[in-house]
Length: 545
Image (cartoon, rainbow, N blue to C red):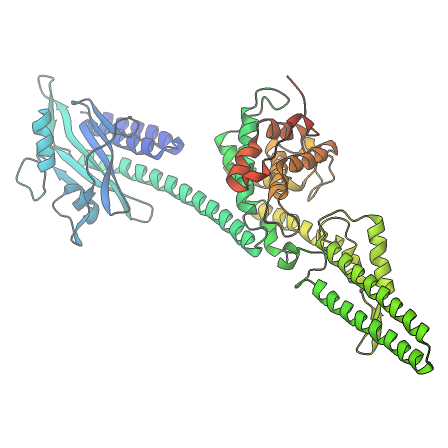
């Protein structure tokens, strides 16, 4: 063949395979293309590609033989049943297997006729030849190196073909020129394989990092442990339901595998800013809790108040007795009993209010302030109210256990989350992670945080994260400030949020009507929460045909 023509052919194949390898996502197909390119340029009749596995063996990945019409592995649906070839035997390099020796020695092995007396064990090739009537003759084996020079596999091509004077194909040896040309394909293929592996490893590293951050945040609190793990799964359940919806405003919404992957990552990172939130605020299970629950301190102050009541009345009784005024003593005893009963009632009221499970009424708030004014105690010779101003402020929290200052600290985690996510140099295929993750505290009316976005300014995946986050929080059984709510109550609360333009009503409707909540509850919560209720009684549902 004319060398100029051959060089042009090689260049064309090199250019073609370069384009194909750069765009191919499937590693198995990519390796097969490398093998086919090597066989094409060398006019080989057969070939195999091997990859080094974790067990230090050469594993068959693709086997091709044109004469036998054989295609195993790669893009075929035909499994490879050939055993892997060990690179080491009893701790020593395997020199009897040609593939193993090529990989261990990192040398190219070019053989004119494998049936000649050689140091390699070719019994398997001879047996296959006998079974199929094939004749394995010339063989070229060369290792595949990655970007740092490590061997990742090997390519073996068999029986170079060339037409004789009669125009008939005959088997010839692989020439040094062909060997050199094929090495360029091998290097190109190895680089492509390495790049894909690096990208995959980086993605796995980032995903593991995201999950580790979530695990660390969950570990900060025994009460919210699991939240960062459950939200991603619930988010994807809702996303799949919205993707499958074929009617209503979201009928045209589709979620590509890439977008779904981004949503998964966003779910793991949605609360990453909580890593800076003080543990005692995350764990605040009662209104008076800081580093410890101050209700015990207040109980002690009630005991002091009780003692002061006893002392005050006893002094008055002693004076009355000295005067011989029995009636006054009896009156003081009754007054003392009333004072003690009132103190016990006030103490029980404060203990109940401290739990923070119910909405605090204006009347209850006034009662707290009356208790603070009713009792005074002396500590270190200083007269003070039984309840400090800070204790009154916390006890007067209307709902939950967090005061206004603590809520701002909790909300600050979204500013930190935003700073973290926007500082990360996400590649193009993960460019939406930050937008998705930051959506779970935004509201449809623009009154949420951290950016105050409206529904129109948010993508569907960002909006549905809020549905997942709220349902997880409402249905969770590990919160310090509440018991697990039945599903009907969770959905009713969320429906009211829809009516108040806080949650996306179309996504909420799909969430409810598709009964995604059932799948989630059965996996992550308790079946007893799945109470009986009429879906149509849930507020905020959209109705469309």
